[in-house]
Length: 148
Image (cartoon, rainbow, N blue to C red; front, side, top):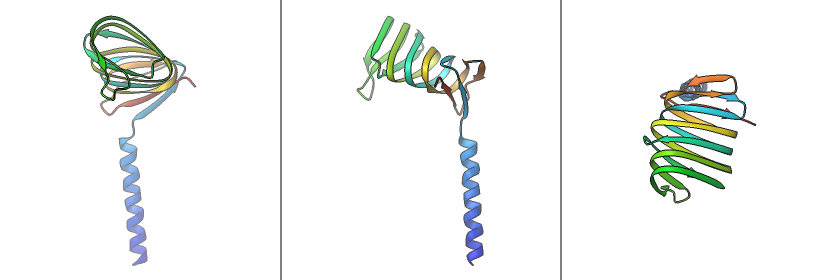
């Protein structure tokens, strides 16, 4: 009886490990600059600077910016959490600088350059480059670390 329980526990643990491995996003590390362009969602968190080009097809929420430079047209509001600035249908540029940036972008065309130290989660279709490595966004999402 004890052997059966032990075997069942081992099988359950291996099954859980297999599921966790399949669900894990690819992780890439590189130097302090990430350049990305795509459609879907992008979430960037870290220290430094992010420059975003808006072409009217995305919604952008910027939290934690110590400096925020905005040029262009679109709707400005407060992010759902009340902690940041929301830009919807934005045509123009946004440059955010800070030591605890948290930037979320959703839409049909997302284009940005992040410099400093951080991680980006890119989900959808598109491409990115960090250092001498490049890759594609995926439907499951890819985590890309830059700097540090």
